[in-house]
Image (cartoon, rainbow, N blue to C red; front, side, top):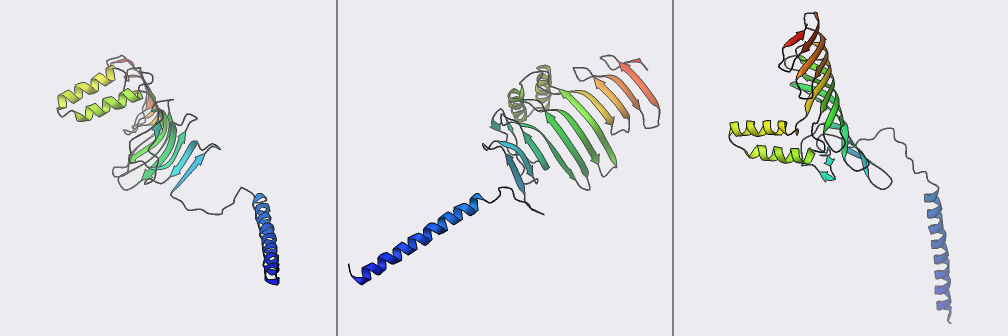
Amino acid sequence: MNDKSKKEISFLKVYSGLLTVALFGTIFYVMNQSKEKSFKEITVERINIVENNGDLKLVISNSKRQHQGILNGKSLPKRERQAGLIFFNSVGDECGGLVYDGNDKEAGLVLSVDKYRDDQVMQLRYIENTEKDARTYGMQFWDYPKEDGFDERNKAFEDLQKIKDNKEKTAAYLKMKQDGLLPEDRMFVGKKMNKDVGLFINDNKGKPRIKIYIDSDNNPKIELLDEEGNVLVK
């Protein structure tokens, strides 16, 4: 072996040793770095919170990048949604959220709770017509007469949009209500647009049955109504 070959071998040994030291140093550095990072400020358009396995649990987003929602394992069609938070359960479905916005025409903030495998059943909400200084806020409750009817309801709404005749469209909508596909307004606690403040309870068909409230003229009222809306007790 000549001197040149010996020098090349010695260089390769030194180079290999330095490379090994650098590699182990890098590994040691990475392993000793904390996985938690602290930021004083972060600016993003959307944040996805996931479980260790990658399952989506929460989306925090602006309006342009907001998640369109998932139900029964299927992504819902693209739609406009306000900025806010969208929650997802362990089967991957949207199960509620917080959205908000406001401008010179309207403003609002809504915290919704969804029924499992279906749409919202409870809302803490504030809605305002800012042009007319009219607003409502409080807690709203709904019932869905038909269990697990979300897919059937969506299909019925798609068919409804295809109907051109207004009478046929009205008849189809009433058929959806008769079939229990539409949500029924069951109770509201808060202030209405007409400035009545109180408790308003409906039966399982969405008809007003009990009203306990203060009207806009500060008159206290208690009303019990029959199915036709006639006041039984006042």
